[in-house]
Length: 427
Image (cartoon, rainbow, N blue to C red; front, side, top):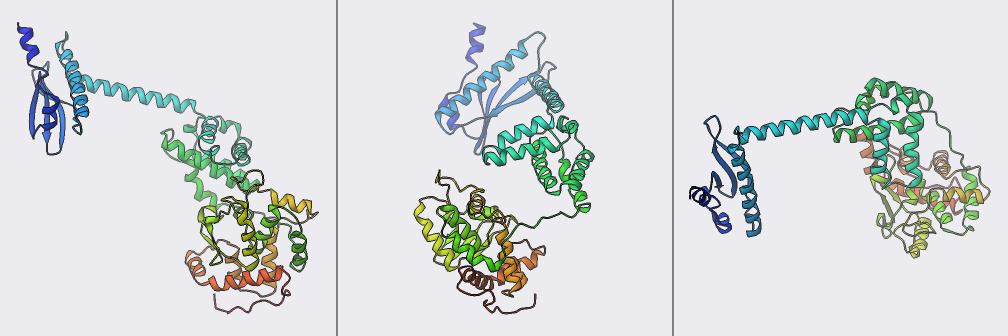
């Protein structure tokens, strides 16, 4: 009879009562309460602890958006309350709040131990390869992806490569990068950037507390050595009109891409990655977004008459790329296609990038424009940010005139010295 009476004092609430409960405490029996305040509601278990103190234990929020949600919340709260009652009824009795605290502490200690084990077993090599597989491979080309991981495997010393990532010090990173910087500056930059990515990711996954690569960047900059640059083989500008005539006789997309690259003084990557969304043919303007530019800044290119002709020819290709791959229109043309074309033409003495040097030499030697304007057309980074903003704002007209003059020259319409007279202005 007593058991029946006790059973009758629990599970008092209906789902509807849960949903319509007003502010205050409403009992479900056996110490389980629904506590409502304004728009919020939560479950509370009130009990007498083994030491005689009255205590309240929160059992979580009560969801009342729908009858189904309220019913599920009620069932879960009753299950938790039943577990608490069982602890109090055990011999010896257990305080549910104390037991919850012990469980949380045990879970925290287990997680800390797991991290210690993970940190001690996750080497730089293992983490770099996992990061490469997760982040780099899905979005980059096979060639770039292979080069990405190979640069680390080839240039990070074995004792560092197979060391736990959490134990690598700033001094070790500094020694590695300083040695690379003295021997191969370009490789040092690539390795530093890739290690920087890896350690940033390791911080997000709680494997390391600080990024040792970021910490040594300032020291590397102070002790940097001048980068030795090898001039790209280029064509003398007085030979360019004849070369362009020969180029226009070549079939295929690569020949049009190369001619477009020449007349716009663009880089290979800027041309092959160009999509139609970047062009406004009515305004004769090509706007290359910052993410595709070497300097990380948006670049505007005036389109000469010849550049517009090439673009209109390419509109029939049926691709989002202006110069797509002949084998797959959903992909851009290979970055080696224009170089391969030059070799087929028997011109291994020049490179695609070398035509930018040809443009620069022509513009400087003929006095076609002030140096600032020429550099702006080439999208060379301006060290002074205020001056860079000034250049972008005021050079538009001069850049347009310069590229028009260049387009007319390469097409053989004007001699080298017959350039547009540009206004002079103190820099």
